Length: 256
Image 1: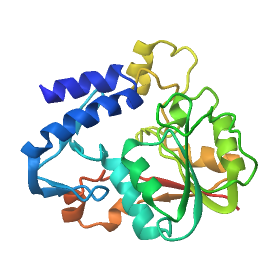
Image 2 (image 1 turned 60 degrees about the vertical axis):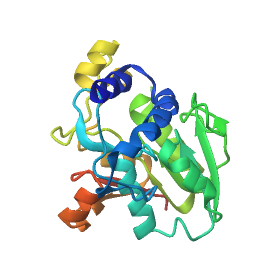
Image 3 (image 1 turned 30 degrees about the vertical axis):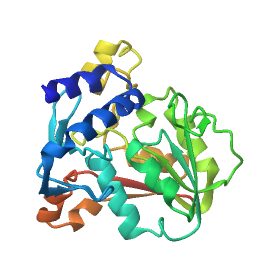
């Protein structure tokens, strides 16, 4: 039953509304999943298992109860903690479409001047369109913008804006849904209904499905891009314990 509810919600309810309702539900049932097999590195909570998640096909052990983190969120957290000074050095951070699992811990980090922004999210500090960011050039040390670019009309304009507001020497993490079996991004104006978008782009509100050329698209805008297979540095036992995505590539984008 829970699996069917999550599948329906992820297909038809916008993510920012899902999180408000789902957070209350999952915390209330988390007591039944206590254990020591899966550990969420964001919340520090441990479970015997966590919930499946997916729009068209559910992935087992994906959604953590207390933080609402998914596999990619836990990987990003571990990357920031283990490979950067994100949690120790003073940084001004812009977080576009902030994920629920990150908001509270980032806001609690005294070294961060943390700004959240979104077009419609009810908990964003600032309402903005990522294609027209209302901040001066070189405003932020770190820019986080995950699973957003596939939704915007002009992703090149959005990428240019992310580059513009990043300080020289700064970095960003810009994850997107990506089909590694395709060399190039699928983007077709005739794919213009929710049903067609779900069929070809895997989600009803996506405007493209990125292929292996995603990193080059970011480079064409002016970013220095590292396609980091950070997850491969973990032994299989930790990938399983933290419920990480085994093949996720992190797109770490720096400004010269």
